[in-house]
Image (spheres, rainbow, N blue to C red):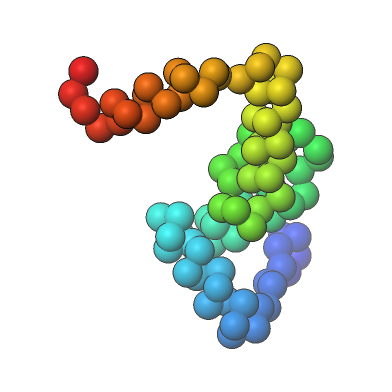
Length: 93
């Protein structure tokens, strides 16, 4: 390993979880693992720009919190407007 690369060994259970998540994301196992490593090691603020890994991801919750904070600042969307949109959801415009 003179090129600086190394092999990471993961137990069978961890490998199966990683493989299932990679398949669900439509990525190769290697690409998914490298992306997960990038997100985990990015400085604060950079990971938020990456693709989230679902509700178990801290990135997901940080993004959700940012959306809620913005809604608090701006007042969000009035319920009447949300209700009207929901009543028309799926209908042709």
